[in-house]
Length: 245
Image 1 (tube, rainbow, N blue to C red):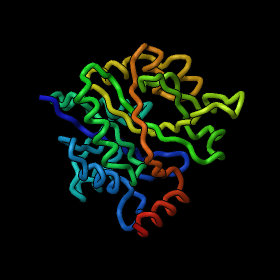
Image 2 (image 1 turned 45 degrees about the horizontal axis):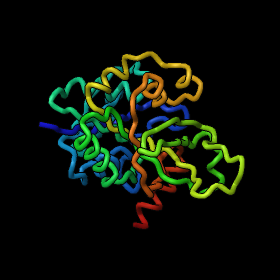
Image 3 (image 1 turned 30 degrees about the vertical axis):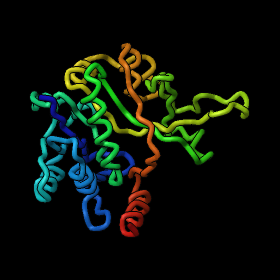
């Protein structure tokens, strides 16, 4: 039977925001908001928080979450997720829900899970939304993607893609990649065993490892542009949004 596991990676160390997962936002730890969003989903069979720090584990257990300690030396959140996925062999679909997105859409999470369920030959799925703010087009912290006509990723970049040689291209839009992923479990375990390629190292985008190895990534289009939390300032902005809802 097909079943789906959501893994929320939450590490303590952060160059810009140490201890971010436990930052109180509207009275709750950041990671608790993410977990509660996942609990609103209808397509998830289990939810687990994957962390490298006992403080995060203990906080997660205190608010009722399942939490797993992982190795402290993982190079990425994907490796942390793969370690946890290996402990759940009965789940053939794994959703990576970023631990710093407290406003993540439960409906979008469900769409990723359902897409993997309905397309068993699809190894990986993610999401993107149109960029409406011109200021973001040349921001290297905003990852862009371009797609095939079938909706699969052609490339991801920190640069503006496609580059508009002319502004008069009907239907031209730039898509912002959202950092949420769904994987077929066996593909995820293969993915983390591959060495980083030239494109991944150049752009510092690990999803390019999948493309470099010929894997297909379906990109679901969404209007959801909920912000994540990378800095204390962004945490305050998100708190205001939550309190105003």
